Length: 128
Image (tube, rainbow, N blue to C red; front, top):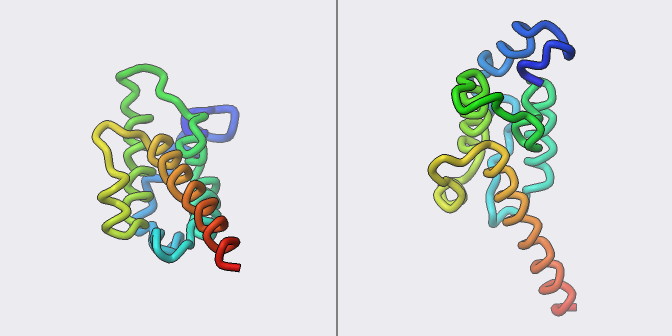
C-alpha cells in the first residue's frame, strides 16, 4: 500500500502511480453501461491498480492518516482520474459526485452494474 513502508521502499511504491500518464494503455476497455463489459473492465482495472500499489484505494483499505494527508488525497485523486477516463461520457455524468473518493466511486459502479446484471438475468430468463 502507498505509505506502508513494510511493503517495500516508500519512494518506489508511492511514486509508481505518478508515472502513469495514459491509463488507457493499461486499461483499454471503456466501461459502457450498454456494452455490459463491467467484468472485463473491472479485472483490467484491479490488475492495473495492484501493479501500481493502488488497490487499497478501490477496496477502501487505504485510508488517509488525517484530513491533511496530502499524499493520500493526491493518490486518491490519481486513481479517481483513472476511473473517470475509462468511462463513457453518460456513465461518467451519472457517477461523478463532489467530494467522492476512488473507493466510493468504485462501490457505486459495482452497485450499478451488479444490480443491472441481476435485472438483465431475470429479463433473459423471462424471454426463454
